[in-house]
Image (cartoon, rainbow, N blue to C red):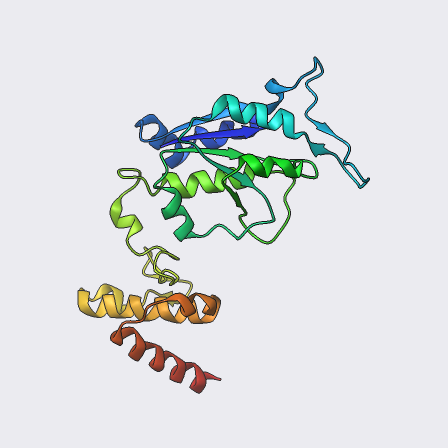
Length: 243
């Protein structure tokens, strides 16, 4: 997979590209990330990339001609172009799996008050990482890259991906490690008894319970098995008794 990021602040990616899992994935040659400075495509010696908006308004807008010049110089006929924008559906795990099928992705990072609306004529999809406003698209682009690259074959252990939150519209179950007891709080005994059937059932029930507590909206999209339906009834009964 090749990802090209168009940005006004290439220096922001230094730590991201050379740390932890992302660094190892790139070193293995499983993916390539190119950082392109949009200012290199400015049309004047002062490297201007923005201007005041027509019709008035606060702030500055990135110019469509400069941004598109950077885009056209760095995309191919196979590139899938993303624009980071708050005017889009929030990025979710199923979107990551869909984008993983693209071999060549270009991400345009907005900044200032945004980009001239005409840039959307050259973009395949707008993408947001949440219902809040950031100063620019650099952090969202890192989030998108991180989410995609860790899903690559041989990127990280397949066992680590099996039961992650959101992949099946359920939150991941709670997990524990040593020490067994800490300040009077013990690891649930079911996890240390060696009975894998009971451990699986416990983890599944806890996954359902946490999803109900913290993200009940996900359950609307989850395809319940008969076992999960029974567990959910038990969970609701238990929560009613506690209240």
